[in-house]
Length: 119
Image (cartoon, rainbow, N blue to C red; front, top):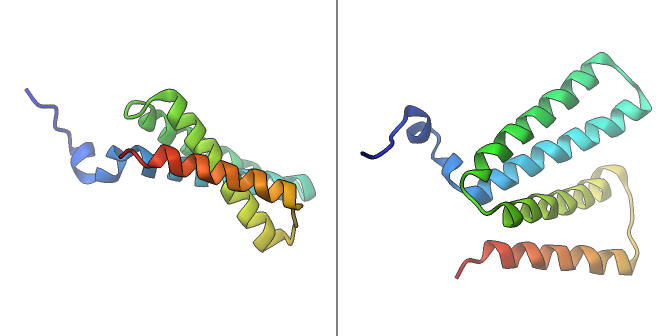
């Protein structure tokens, strides 16, 4: 008998481990930037936001773990986080990176592409 739940039917996105990894990474990166904000100006609202973003990321990652190999999923999420943090830190915080750091980031992105390409 096929397992068919309302949850699976309405949220087809949750069947795609790459999409789940991206959602988890966005949650974790958002929490990271909220932590940066908290370190500069601590507030209860920011602390609650950090908690909620981390809880959301963890929840999505748990769902993804049931649909992908642990090693692949973990590396994918971390790689996406690195790419997003670097992009946002350059665009929003005006940070810059050396040629060596950029090369390392490019290698991470190439690794993500290799994990995503299942052909």
